Length: 433
Ligand code: NCD
Ligand code: ZN
Ligand code: ZN
Image (cartoon, rainbow, N blue to C red):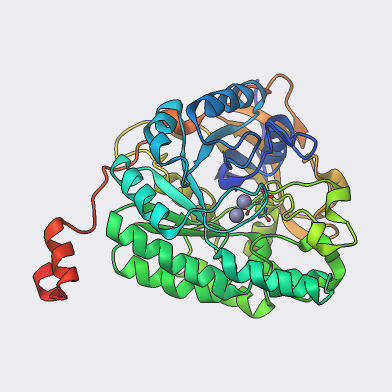
């Protein structure tokens, strides 16, 4: 069989390190089959699925059951997250044994109502995970402030979409990023900041990197491209945690990506049904919207516009995620994960995103009607086409594999030794040098 790629560019398949495929528990919103089909249409060859499914992925048995579901349904490769919280500190090795890509820690409330750990419990959990080398991804928002503000807004009768933005000000994220970075610095844990939404979070992220903390960050297309003006147009559809912020944040976030403060693009693909997204009362609208299949066209549009180079995009979409989660071949080594995970892309194709055309079960997003340039035409996972000519390839359901099996995290190296910690505590920084 010959194959003609005339006019197309071949990119590494995107690795989306933040998706919610809702399986098991909320399969009316999405499941592993529809979610990974959406990924294939988006040029995404690997996804990391979040643990806020039912039951919450917080023990080995639940994780094994989820692995069985994913293995039978997935069109593309995947990694599975497990929750790190107050109740799972003693489950760390059991979860690693059952096969995870990393841990997810919910510092603030969001969809799924997973209990948020105290700072003390986080400290203990970070200590437990640090020597394993696994990375801890953080939903970095501080609970108490946002809950109090939401209560006040609800009591004052505000139920417009902008009330959601007002309920979760950027300081809620900035404080959480700084706190997580301090805990990571003192425990040697590796951490990743999910869905960076504001310019203000770049400060603590940049500072922590400068101090040598193994900290990485992602942002999502909606934080780069949308702003307060989109609330009137989208109403509840735009409601997401953290909220889409004022458009003054867009350019600093782009700059953060370009200067390497933000390491990658993820989507936080968070599907809900149209009924769940269009309720009159904003406080009862489920947070999030689909994104796994629109990320690449949205980001390539900026390549076409000359904002950055195609190589920058590949760094944010594939190279850095692979490096950060140990899926990147060491020099000279050939690993299975590097086997022909490819997106065949028409960089000049101008088209319009339509919610109705989404593969996701959640056909409702802020991107409906948006003009883009760049189309993933075919997607290949480990040498096999799973999407060809904008159609799913037959018999590729179940082709996807868990990439935890090929993950190689570098050995854990605590930033501090007992001596340097003692010096810091004794306030003799020169002794720490
Ligand atoms: C996510 C979801 O729906 O699972 N929702 C969201 O608004 N982002 C949860 C999350 O990532 O916080
Ligand atoms: Zn989150
Ligand atoms: Zn999420």
